Image (cartoon, rainbow, N blue to C red; front, side, top):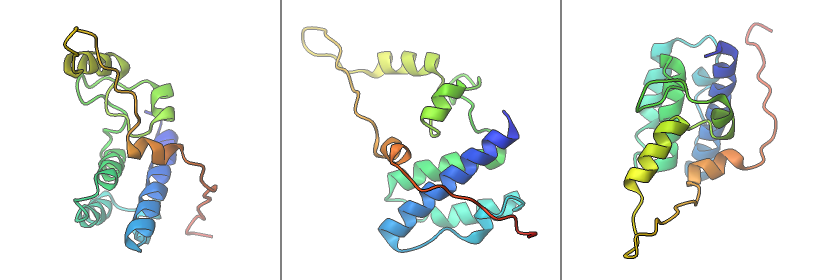
Length: 145
């Protein structure tokens, strides 16, 4: 996956983590996460501390995606390991499955009505809604300026 794309997604996720922390807990994201040259170990330590908000599923999903941008696993399907389609990642940066595996999983786990009609579960998760909310542009300054 293109490093610039992953860096852009990482900044988007960090911004969303900041929004959740600020709105719900009155906290902000530590500056070390905003640093593009931050050490992976420092980022993991910060993410681990933020995971103490375990009751917040949206925050946990954001932190999982953020961690994957540092490990190099971002954008790979959790089921088959293949690259998730770019349009899908652009639409939902927290996507965990490629279209093929998601279709298999949704067919396998969709509840059925007594008359064998499938139930369509089409409501987006709260985290997906967070990503589709309008947000201000974020421009990061290079720390060497």
